[in-house]
Length: 295
Ligand code: NAD
Image 1 (cartoon, rainbow, N blue to C red):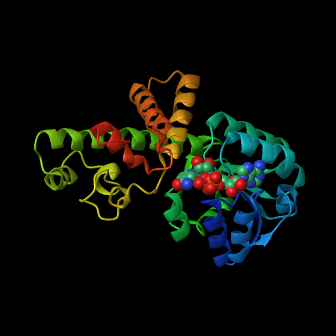
Image 2 (cartoon, rainbow, N blue to C red):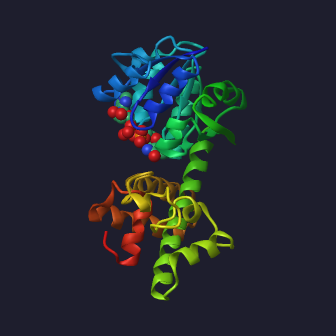
Image 3 (cartoon, rainbow, N blue to C red):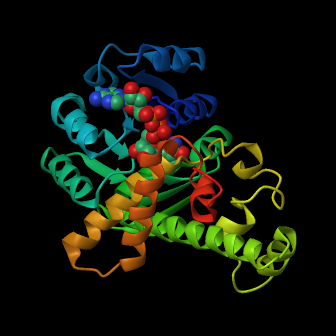
């Protein structure tokens, strides 16, 4: 079993770190937010006084941080200086592809193997240990990361070299954001046409309109009892997180010259929805804005 430093034990990182403990690993956690660290401690993690202490001398270091700025900062000022030769570095945060590749290159320069391994599955998936990891990095590093990742998730896919995990993540979430908006539009249109919501669901779920935004996270109350729409759009996956990922996709599209007009529109619509005070709602709450039902 490995000794693992875990930096960033927020909503996602905390249950992930606790699942590593449950799998028999020794986890040393760090987070500047004391309450987060206390909860990690009650879940069986040891606590460190700094990111450098969490990283020092470990077999592996996992980071789960808000954005590229924090990842650059924590790697540049703590992890790369503190890790010993042979420490495997795993960044599970969702960040921009360029920063992921820069940090990966800095790790390689320091003689350390690193993978970017962003996740899909949200807080529920993190707690249940059912996350999907999309992993970028050299094959040997990904093979070393796999036994650690499977303690926190069910599916590990090697997406290619450094940064490709992040590339897969933002492409997937651009599909998700755009599909949620159009599913919401379809229900709003159906309402105006006098089409029963359950009938539309039953038909589209068995037709070519079928998608996760419809059948799992259905944006209208009723058809899918577990969906946030039946619980006042409590997240789930917040609109703020969706906006962050759509903006990362736009940043990558601008950097590469890819044409993503639907992704751009989805980012603009989620910005409107968030600016109207809905950042903390599940992203399926955009139905309220699209339908004119408020929000
Ligand atoms: P969060 O804000 O709950 O947790 C982030 C943690 O990082 C916080 O506890 C914060 O105190 C800590 N942190 C900030 N700066 C730090 C630093 N310099 N050193 C150490 N710790 C620091 O966010 P989250 O929901 O856990 O998300 C974490 C990452 O996972 C994000 O990149 C997010 O995009 C991604 N993600 C989140 C979800 C989700 O549903 N919440 C789903 C998939 C991916």
